[in-house]
Image (tube, rainbow, N blue to C red; front, side, top):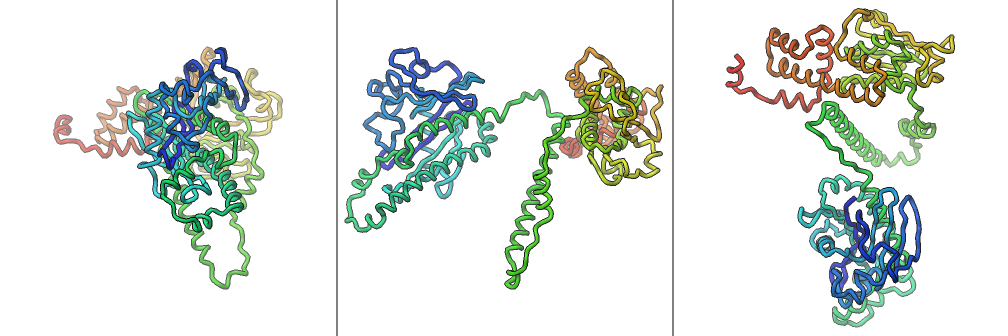
Amino acid sequence: MNAIVALCHFCELHGPRTLFCTEVLHAPLPQGAGSGDSPGQVEQAEEEEGGIQMSSRVRAHSPAEGASTESSSPGPKKSDMCEGCRSLAVGHPGYISHDKETSIKYVSHQHPNHPQLFSIVRQACVRSLSCEVCPGREGPIFFGDEQHGFVFSHTFFIKDSLARGFQRWYSIIAIMMDRIYLINSWPFLLGKIRGIINELQGKALKVFEAEQFGCPQRAQRMNTAFTPFLHQRNGNAARSLTSLTSDDNLWACLHTSFAWLLKACGSRLTEKLLEGAPTEDTLVQMEKLADLEEESESWDNSEAEEEEKAAAVPEGAEGRELTSCPAESSFLSACGSWQPPKPSVFKSLRHMRQVLGASSFRMLAWHVLMGNQVIWKSRDVNLVHSAFEVLRTMLPVGCVRIIPYSSQYEEAYRCNFLGLSPPVPIPAHVLASEFAVVVEVHTATRSNLHPAGCEDDLSLSKYEFVVTSGSPVAADRVGPTILNKIEAALTNQNLSVDVVDQCLICLKEEWMNKVKVLFKFTKVDSRPKEDTQKLLSVLGASEEDNVKLLKFWMTGLSKTYKSHLMSTVRSPTASESRN
């Protein structure tokens, strides 16, 4: 992640100061910062953890604040710094971590060496400890602009028995030029930076309590005669963070934390190039995710209301025993018996076609594409789940309604994929219906029931698959065009499974575009049937099966697309031009 993470401090003498910062270097390190070949550069320590190799190196001079580079360094002069403003000692080279996987180096020192970066970090430091603070002066805030970068800042206090108010003010800031990326990383940064802050505050609190126990400062100050304010500031300003936390390895630990933060935050989000508008599957998935979030929020609100009601217990109810919530107990028991998911039984559509046979697979695929109810009866729950995961790839996301495994039959309006246990009865009208297909999985009586050469024969050799329907598909029936193209791709052995998956995506997108045109033509524009027939001929979907498929797939259109079209009002001129 191209960002800088810095620890800042508000010094009572010098104002906001940058104490420690970690930056990412993709190019080779500048002279004196990363190479150990120069004279005077001696490797002191190396430690490797999590694929990142950390080293501390002594350089001939420090670019941040050495005596020989005071004039050229972008940092403040040594005379303008006190112990509270200083992190690394004079001549300390800083810390370097080498990421072997990406050949990226994470470099930590008190100030960035580049003058422009120093200016950006300096401005962010001043703003985070002066004007850009949240109420209470502790907590996260976001600010910035295109010129100076965008900043995630979290201010906090550290206990100090010698400071005014017994605390000192610090902030941890993350600076990026990518505003969207930084905002999307807010929850991650907030959680990890709060962890670092809690650790620092915990160490400082132990030191503070020990000092107060040995020599209470509050009583001593109250008994001390009044002295000028400036003399008080000069007496307690110079105290370093390592002294406040009593941790000599503080800066090495902060370097490790900041380097990991930059690496983890950069790898958790990836950019994906989208060419054109989002697909219908993407829109439907986004709508489902939004519905789940709303549902979870409503559950949280209802649970909060129940807790408030439970808190108002009558006075005579103290001795009554409260029963545990059944939902919670079942959740805990489920967690206790949780097992890792089993591998998929059916690997792909081609694999399923080989197992079921060409004719049975064609009948099953025809019912799937037409939107008819597909019922699998088997004792193996994992097999049913695997079959549905493979079959659903033939449909748009909005057309898939799955009940993976049920103890009773569910009507077709509730689901088009239904898993049942073998003893569960299916109504007679469903078995005789042309709008349903049943796949019964029986125990095999022979070792090989499907063609040789099928993948993973061992896991399926114990099963026999029987596909039945009230209206079986005739062998000479043409069927929908997309089904014929899918079968052609599956039978072409020159195409790998990945290529077939991409072909399937392209076919679905092609027919979803036809669905969009038909929806606008019939539902929005309300064209007559004669014009609709002409449109279907132009789209190459005038056959009966293709028309049924388009009407079913129309139910998979996203709410966003439908509402956008339905909200458009035709102008009178447009109506006249069509007439």
